Structure formats: C-alpha cells, structure tokens
Image 1 (cartoon, rainbow, N blue to C red):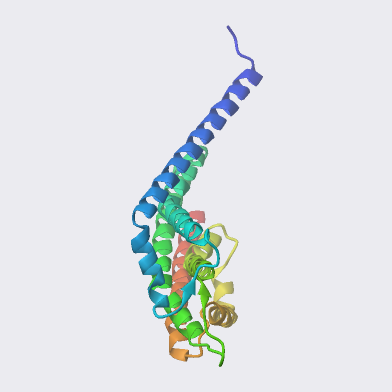
Image 2 (spheres, rainbow, N blue to C red):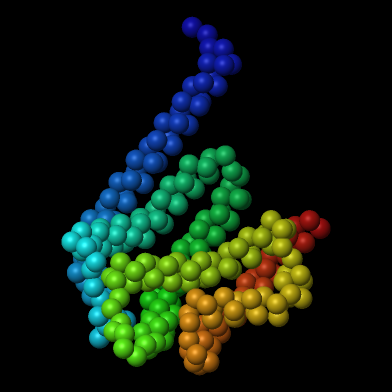
Length: 245
C-alpha cells in the first residue's frame, strides 16, 4: 500500500493536533492540581492577603461574594502554581522545530524568566503592596467612614502583583531584544534618563505615596534591574560580534 504526499502531510497534521491536544489536557490537569492545592491552603492564603489591611473594615456586598472570593483565590493560586509547567509544555511542543542551540538558549531564558517572576511576586507582596495600601488607607474624608469591598481589595492586590511581576521581566525583554538585534545597548544607554523618568512616573502611579523614601524603595531596584540588563546585553553583543567574525 503506497502513500501519496498529501496522505503523509495529512498524517503529520493529525499527529501535531494530537500532540497539541495532549499538551492542553496536561496543562488543564496541572492547573486543576494547582487549584486543589490553593484551596487546601486557602485560609492561610486569605490570612496572608489580608495582613496589609489589618484594622481596616472590609465587607462583602452580596451573599455570593464570599464564594466568589474563595474561587478567585483558588484559580489565581492554581494559575501561579501551574504557569511554569504550562509554559514548559508549550516550549516542549515547539522545540522539535528549533535547533539545539536555540533550544538551549530558550531554556536559559525560561529559567531566568521564572526566577524573575518569583522575585517580582515576593517584592510585590512584601514591599510595593504594603506601601501602597498603607498610603491609600491613610486617606480619610471627615464624616465618611472607610469601608472597602473585599472583591475590590483582592482585585487591587492581584493587579499590583501582576504589574510588578511584569516590571521584573524587563531584563528578559531587553536581553531578548538585543539577542534578536531589535534593540541596541547604545540606544538604551543614550535614552537612559528618559527611561528613568518614565519609570519613575509609572511607579508613582502604581505605588501611590507622598513619601520619597518609600518611592525610592521601589525605584532603586528597578534601576538595578535596568543596569544589569544593559550589562548582560553588552556581553551578548560582544558574543554575537565574535560569532560573526
């Protein structure tokens, strides 16, 4: 029995679809496992999340809010726990089409990105979010009692954490851009002061505070991240220059 070129092509497509389906199912499985783990420790997680709001009056606005609050914590926790595995499954799906050299470099980027995500998450939880909430909770209007919705509080918490985690991915963006020759370290160095000003404005909005010291606590690590990224970018440029020579 002979196979035509179209038969072979169709078989290849079916195999790719089957492999993709397998990766998706595995991703869903690990997400569910992450949700279960998060739910198992949801009381401890809630206690940790509410610590910065100590002494504040947080309220639910509907009978279903407590249920949705727990579900959101379970889902977000499950996503955080399973995300590294999901990204790795995606990489394992496309890696056969890439060269061994590129695969090795992607692995380095992947591990570095995960490390920066964890650092960003911890920095948000223990530095930026407490600073922001301390300032926001200090704002009072005479004759009006502050009562905050738990749902809005959690949304603020998650948004702040995500923003800081994205900021901590700047080295990956810079180094990746330099490796692909989309960015140049010389250009970034020349525009450094404008980048710092833009970053300072963004951080002042993300972590609202009138205290210069608290703003510096957030701003200085961002400068360090940017400068370290430039140094790493210069090293990559030298390596690529030698490879071309």
